[in-house]
Length: 145
Image 1 (spheres, rainbow, N blue to C red):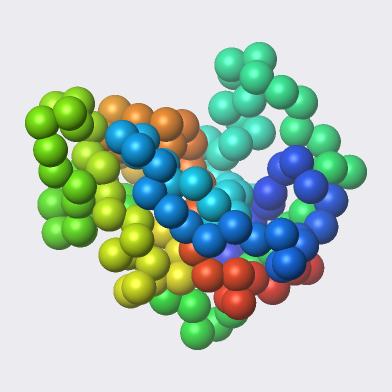
Image 2 (image 1 turned 90 degrees about the vertical axis):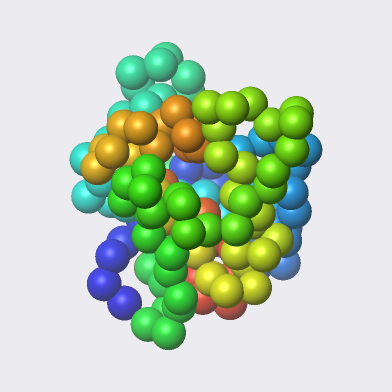
């Protein structure tokens, strides 16, 4: 376990309330999972919220976590990384977006980390993934610290 992440909006991780990943219509993000940002992110959730006057990210309403050493993490660092991943295709999908097949990805990976600050093109291709973030799809790999 090396990288530390932070989740804002809850003061602790409730494994019992974890919602499993499901495709969410034509959204670039699925429903469910645990979302967080790396503590040392160049541009994390707290930065995005401040820049967009979205909400206040309070330490007392957050928790930090790591992933188990055996967690299988998909790291997306640039737009080209998306070309090799399972995608949802269709006439209704906006041409500028890529809809990842999260139900297929969760069979292969425990989490997906997207580093928007490495390639801002990811912001547009995965519109809605606004910052450097991680989506944990398997609650068993979460280690709260």
